[in-house]
Image (cartoon, rainbow, N blue to C red; front, side, top):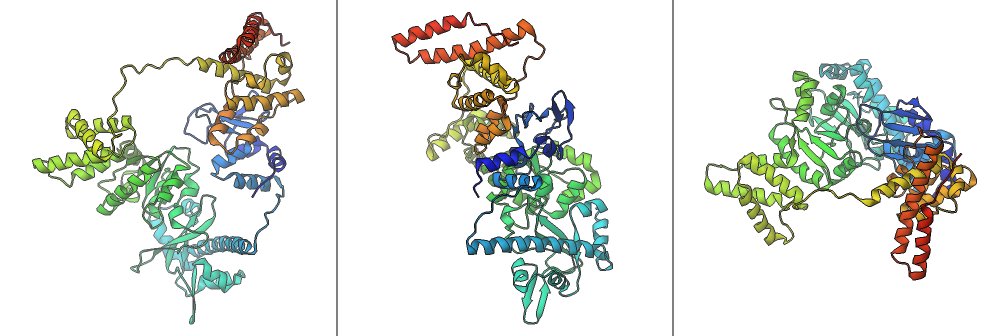
Length: 585
């Protein structure tokens, strides 16, 4: 759905960023801004600021920044359209409606009905759990150590053994047989309707936006299967959803704990590990990995410690690696799963196991080692060849060498021999696969542009906070004087707004919302700390030096392609800069 710039700006201006962010983050006033703990990375000292004047947020720790729309996009993991629609609803704004084809309308209507139906079903199961019919299920959950608050938070319920009880409840809610058939919650047969789930403790499965989209059920007694999941429907694709994600995405940690089952996730959340998620009765997929990558850059696999769990970890590692995620593997021995581990050793011991978690690649190599008898020279050679082959999976030469060093230390392998083996194998498979050789000098040379960029950010922030200062330099500094295309674009918009009397950073950022990297860099341009402690001549001197540095760099860049006449003019302009004196007050 396309929304005009006017509509986007109306939603933004009517969505006060302090109120919106304040509903998610505890903020305290400090000067003209408000500060709190950053919701986008883990920190102990508040570095996350919200400026009501600029209608912006910015974290001085991790660099996250933007306006109210991007806050919703980042915090709730929404698309631009979803964030805009959520803010419009919050502000009481009616957005233009998309015109659907008849087929699109039928699909949209059915999806809405199925979401409503699953919400009603979750409420029914929850009521049943707390009724006499659900006593057995409630006893099972309390015996597993779950508190009433945890049961409520995850919306756990019970499907009674009475035939067709959910079907009758939903029919009373005016859902049709055709809609119920599409839901996957009931089966319609000639002999009548039958609930898919019965005599089971129920686990509502929610999407990232807290909407119930499916269920998992654990049978009471010895029935089969032990765990039963909803079939896939128009609202549920098990390869694109993770159990517990709706809660885990709110964690400020930069990694997820990946488990195997519902109870593992719930137990971990109850113990304070609110970043736990699990796949939904299916093998881990590339879609799961891509979904995780939207929220974090690292994962810790905490699969069952039995053979099946280890195999599941080995299958998941290359998929997660392909998505660009850092991987560690946690061992829970002598216990089988997180639920059992925490019940016996507690949360502190589990946190220690997280700290001790093994690197994913080294875990893979350790599993491979168990397949060989290293006392046999031929098997030892085969093991080394396996390592060399796996090292070639690292396309980055430095990363490959770092892992090679770690493996050689772990298994007492001569590094030089392994390097030759990898290079030899790599030359046969891909000539480019060579071991990284560090340069003789790694000292970083100072970048002369760093000072210019800093001056440019300072000036843009200065004009943003005091638009009237641009009048003092309007014949000296123009947008083209800035050093990069992005800086030029931002400067042009700030200058236009400054001429009109006020600068609105929140509005300016709308122009960069479709490019995450540009948006982040643009947001940083408004966040330099001005020399507030300076006054009088000292303040004038700081401003003059900032302007002169930007203009000098602009003139020097222009001189590189100037002809003789233009060069003479540029040299005269540089000489004039030495006399520049700007008085602000």
